[in-house]
Image (cartoon, rainbow, N blue to C red; front, side, top):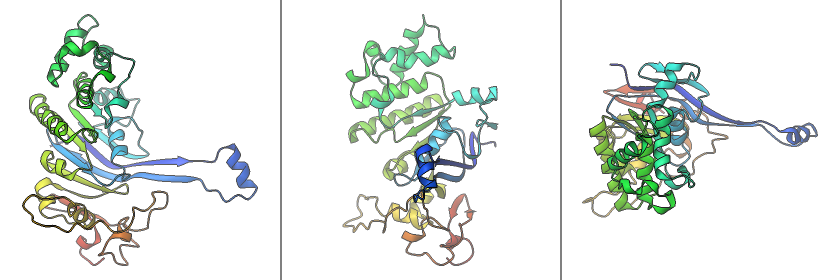
Length: 332
């Protein structure tokens, strides 16, 4: 079966070249260098229809950049993103533009992602009007239906974003995404800015919408407890590279990559008794100058000479993919 979403060798580089002053300073002997950050490095995975895939990793590993490329908010530097078999990285393809509309993103901070000068009715309804999903005359009823769907009182449609609580603003963002009738939602830390009790309500809303609207999710989060609860499969990223992909139960029961093992060691467990939590040793290397070989090797307790020289291949066994020399038929 063709995956709904498929990423193949997707990379994103951010490059800073010299401006006029820096060029002059460089010619005069200043110790300057043009910089390049590989925010995402040859990421490949697929998402099936109706599936919830969790994307996890430490801050700065490239999760949000990857989500924004899938949503079409950032161009890819290399690789291909296909949605229902169509290459959506080609902006000139009319079919790709139509597919892009069916992929929507919900952002982490609802206040900064909503226009403070617009009423909620226009925030939710203007895209639907633009794409011909409703008329301006029918927009109030259309918006009321969307607000009711996400648990908001339709009578609040004439209010501005600052008149809502954080949880209500996040529901407005969800309604805005749903207004163009997408099939695929990218949730970028969509509950991280909310109180714990509100987080539970929004997670339940996501699950209800998945069931009622047959939605597919790429759920980006640093909260492994949330991912364990909501995701069918988990993709683990470290410093721009995908290091492990597995069904949720398999990954939490038996993580294979040393980085994933270190992450899961930090998750508190009910009934586990007294636990001694050990942080992952060392600091994340600078993406401006990542280590050769496996990016995790400076912090890995099992790293060997091969880890410091070769980029590990991704090995898949029983649907569990790992990019680690320890699982590549040899020693690290």
